[in-house]
Length: 232
Image (tube, rainbow, N blue to C red):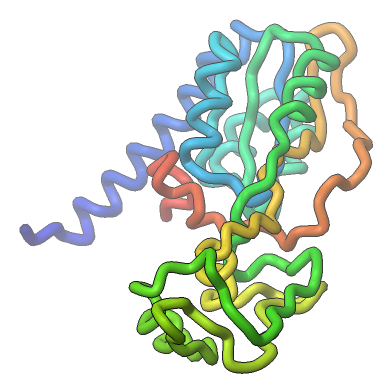
């Protein structure tokens, strides 16, 4: 079906206005507003967070649009500035206390398969020999990834030493696939709270320690979770 550019632009404008209205309509219903950043997140992770924090609201979308919605109130301008240039994050509106929210997200950190493009937290080197955890059926796939493997009596063997990833360097798409096949979770899923505004204390910057050495996540990782995310 043909969709004209006019139709596309109209839909984008409607989505932006919907996001602005949703933020503004919910401001007075909650005592606290947090701005957060996401590392290595998945759609299922954020879905679970949304469900567990109800009736709190998590809103994600184009950061400039969210900032515009917040800046309609002078007291929220410092909070809105945290959204500027934020590659992957959003707004949490809640009546829970600051300590409750901090404790919740600290408890939600977990290991996950590393995304390609993120920095490797450690160097992984495979030694020559059998890889019994890998099915013989995927050996042709490994060869396609240019991993030096061969079958010996139905068991996948590594022909020579192979470096999957190097600490501090970006994980390649091949390395990300191989780490998943090997069931090696090098990534860490987490939400980092950047700042908060509350009706009682006003703006509060949350100077929490940096818990992740991962590169900033790619915004498209969350598009499946929120179709408004970074929509032009």
